Length: 348
Image (cartoon, rainbow, N blue to C red; front, top):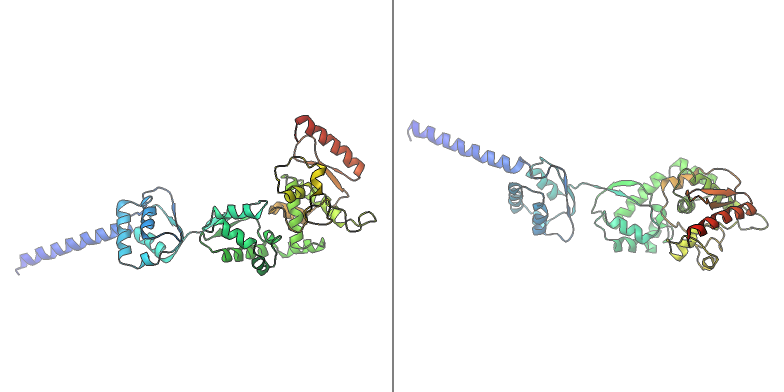
């Protein structure tokens, strides 16, 4: 081969290599996504490689998906698909996206534990943000052995759920999810909070149970310590008339006992229900919370206002706040004003 032909061969080879390098770089490192914002792809247990491609097609550029398919053909990914919530960022190369999917490098979700009234509603709300279905979650919360593992029973297990927002992987199994909730609960119950509970002669579960009643009474965070103080006074009262303590007589517990949360007025016929949650008949706290209380509600109990009120009634101006009274006679006067306001508005 003469010198001229050698040069042509070298140049041609170099051009091919350059073209190949350019194509490889374009395939591996040019933007996989056609979106201008971060997209999230959810891969669950039912997905196979075809459904993965289908989900990626909504986000990927043509060349990006083609390169992803090529990488799959030269790997074992199709036989080992990892569930999870995967972030695909603008400008991110196909190679990086593929590595994330192949290695299960997912993005956590921001899960907010809601302040809801029932375990069924809790399970439903969690399942909307997680891969777990609501039936699986609810089954765990109603399982005595599961609850016992975490130091609770089926009436108190909701005490473990502190309504904050947590970074958690979307595909976490139920047992690991409950482990995380226990860890967060222990973190929430700091030394300071535990000491305040001890000074009140209450356990954390009892604080949460009382807080659930306070939260049901008002959404006004400023008034919650006053209401907490009133119920605490009733709880601690011991005299000839109330040797076991004054009944809390909390209307929200009646709603919970009947599972009728839409009730606007509590009539006498509703107070006869045989239920451990009927605080008109049973002294002391109910066996567990009537909702997952807010952090504000819990801290309102721990930092309750020290006063001598034993009664309260919603204000007749429907402001969401209450009139407080020391004697039953004062309370009856307040109750008449509120009843009259209800009647004038036709509220039954």
